[in-house]
Amino acid sequence: MTSYRALLGRIIPVTALLTLSTTANAAANLESDDFVGISFWLISMALAAATVFFLWETQSVSGKWKTSLVVSGLVTFIAAVHYFYMRDVWVATGESPTVYRYIDWLLTVPLLMIEFYLILRAIGEAPGGIFWRLLIGTLVMLVPGYLGEAGYINVTLGFVIGMLGWFYILYEIFAGEAGKMAAEKAPPAVQSAYNAMRWVVTIGWSIYPLGYIFGYFVFVDPATGLTTAGASESLNIIYNLADVVNKIAFGLLIWYAATSETKAAQTA
Ligand SMILES: *C/C=C(C)/C=C/C=C(C)/C=C/C1=C(C)CCCC1(C)C
Image (cartoon, rainbow, N blue to C red; front, side, top):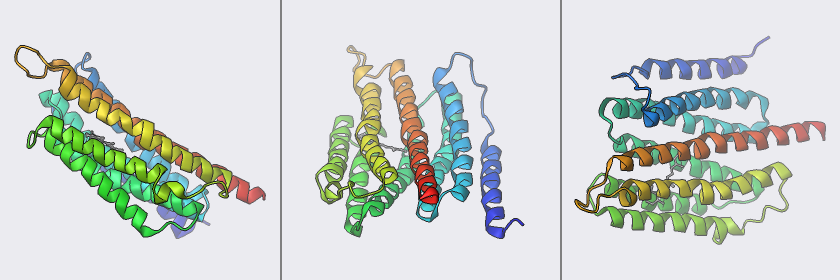
């Protein structure tokens, strides 16, 4: 007998997939040499598939991991919807879809902060203040980044303030209250999720400022001071790659930790 819960577990992912496919109507044709456009297409589908996978897999992990997998699924779902729009903007205009990009980040980065908080809670008492400080760091990182990219403030100023926000998050995770939470006593799967989290915020997230550097400081015509075509191409390729690492690969690491701990608990 299939229970209602199990049934819902099947219906929700399928509904998500259908919703996503209805938003997929291309405004223009993808050219065979438009590699940035191709990356938008590939990643939008990878995000949609990852969403179905993470939500589906909530059925086969133990209680506390279910929430983590749902959060991973929400991150890839929100990103998939934005990728469908970003893809259309890029293919139709060849311009950076900055506003969709930042709306996506503004929703998904706080969700990732919830994910980090869930991991911290799995290794011991995690005071709620940690979550709020990580959230403030997120806003200091993203808002000036948007203002700089959209031309509201100086592009270098936006970058510098955004970097300070990111450094604050790193401080909190390595040396602050969150960093002091020792993972040694936690089960191996939780330890590996905790390590994955630190690597993701340090290495995985460093890809984003790199994209910004290539987009605004590297491809500049010295005569006019304006950015050249390579600027928006490299910016979008690098941001897209960063999303694969920080949304899909990170979600898979959580899934791996969840399934191995669930198995270990079942055999213990
Ligand atoms: C799923 C989306 C994620 C994880 C987005 C993360 C975005 C960043 C880590 C952005 C960082 C930036 C800086 C550190 C400096 C200023 C420019 C930003 C906003 C690109």
